[in-house]
Image (tube, rainbow, N blue to C red; front, side):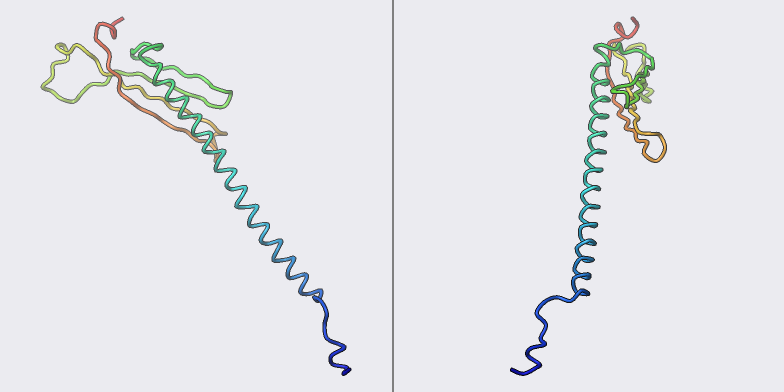
Length: 140
């Protein structure tokens, strides 16, 4: 046998192993960052879903459980979501309609739900709709 065939390398060098581990560590770091970003996005989406459900339930209650009249109210749900409800008369800007001859009144219902720490993470949603009430019911 020749001496050049005997000294042939039979494995990886230490430098090759260190480079392979560095690439592996970098890849795992990127994958963990992507995964944690996805989890954070899912948590934010869940918070928005809960806030929208709170706001929609308050709008649905207005006119049935909460009377349609000019007022404001507020409260807290789940010790995290602060809400405020504002009901105010809504007047059309059409001058050809005499308000005395109209049998119904429009009310603007505005719900704002706020959550988070109020600084960089403070979030809010606002839903607004119009509800119609008979003038007889609105006066009581």
